[in-house]
Image 1 (cartoon, rainbow, N blue to C red):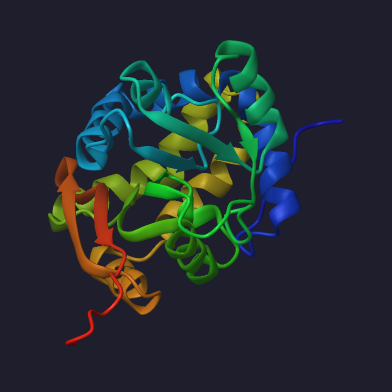
Image 2: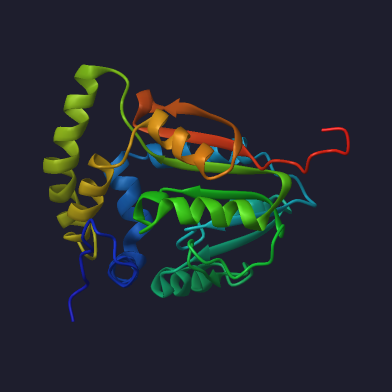
Length: 239
């Protein structure tokens, strides 16, 4: 059976099946499609998370674990989680030392306050209900814990924005046909990037979900933005 392509209504089973179908060559394809810039984006996320040994990090939508490896290699307790079983299987094959966990971002299988940091790279736009996911991230992080979300965003230079959108909708699917195990899935990915809200809209959404101190940093002229937020602490007796 051919791998599926999800649609923008983001039915979870469709999205999971689509990522199952691209798992084998997913990381290589991303590197080719971004010209290697994805490695720089991931390094920026690791710096933003700023985890140290003794911290516990939930890396949700971790896929094959590429985003989790820097934490594990630095002695940080990281849990790579994803709802694509194909991605998890590929991750376990590559890094059997990591505790890959099947998890739905909208209903995480973790206790309240289990983590110091929750991070998600290039996954929030694939969730059927991003608000529910953001509330779940808040539930499983400790008071004062942090959120770091890296996601495609809106380029801040108008001319570059036009060129970028043309690349997304025309060139990206063409390149994917040469390197991906399921090139049709990249039509969905291009559409999901095009329709995803910009930096300010996502920041407002994070705030509405209960997070505080929300801010973002643009990467590559706003092609990608890294959003930071902090979980509220309980009010003191004098508050």
